[in-house]
Image (cartoon, rainbow, N blue to C red; front, side, top):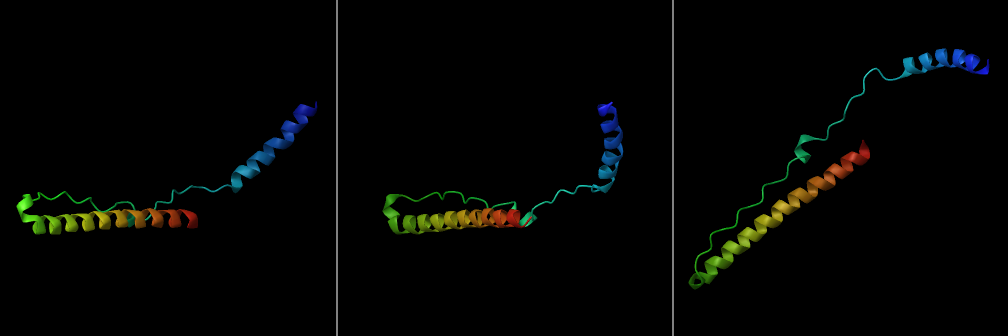
Length: 87
């Protein structure tokens, strides 16, 4: 008897609760500019050891480009983390 009474009371309550829910759940997507990192630079073809100054300049440019690509990716990951905290 108790079970039937409880079921009779719960059915209208469940229907009322279902009517209050959102009609559509939307998925929030992160900003597109935060989803792609800069490409990693390709390693240069270094000249022989007899041109050490040119080798050093090419190596420095490569390392700076590599660091820049890392910084780009690092900042976008931090941006995604900040965006996720807001949403």
